[in-house]
Image 1 (cartoon, rainbow, N blue to C red):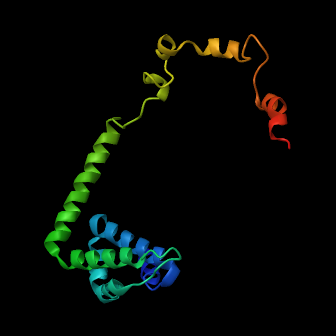
Image 2: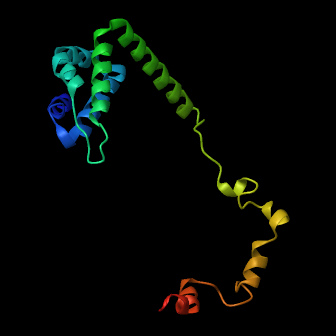
Image 3: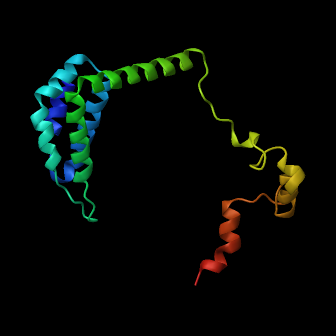
Length: 163
């Protein structure tokens, strides 16, 4: 069912160049990670893919978007016809899959620290270097004065923008 839609998208032209490009990208992924039957089907449709090596579309800004489709189609046909390269790509994809599977199963997933943990980015150590935030609020109408909010700005600076 998916491949039926992909072959249909391969026939899109003109401003739908993106559909063709994405279909080729999905096929490239399926060569690396999909069933062996996908490779056989790509070989059966090699002529349809190779026709895309002359795909032309220049967008309204003068960029040749067809170039992306031409390069992707040529590389896919070359890949599908080279058994050694297919085996290499599939082996590399399997190794990456296993690597990421082992990282996620051990709980070793990368999680960035919040910005407040970094020095110099609003963290707890910045008070020593730049003074406290409470001090700024006190001076500019914070806790000890009236709270600063959007309505205050509009009324306070309203005269500046009314002509």
